[in-house]
Length: 108
Image (cartoon, rainbow, N blue to C red; front, side):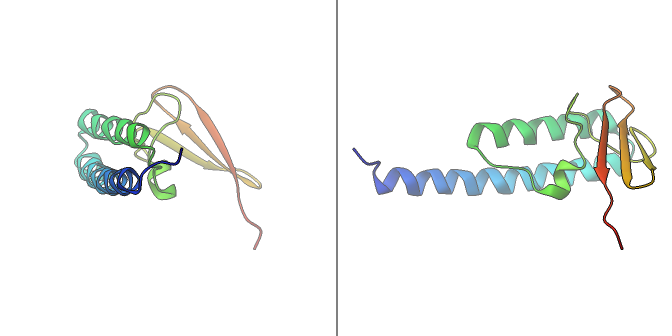
């Protein structure tokens, strides 16, 4: 039996609301990160991730770069994140949990 159209419409509305809340929380985390209140910034990131998981909404790629996959901390370059460039890779190390992520650099 197929789902009703009303259910689909309500699900889409919930996902749109969740996406806007995630965007708001990530902008608040950016503001607190710039003010060096990293505990509150990490809390905002945790809330945004939990909303995304609950309503099946993904973080945008630019937002994903600001979150540690290991511990969920807000990543601020120079404070909670070490960024190094290798020959063909960008190495990002979380200073909270030590997780290392390597990303290939594109050729020019």
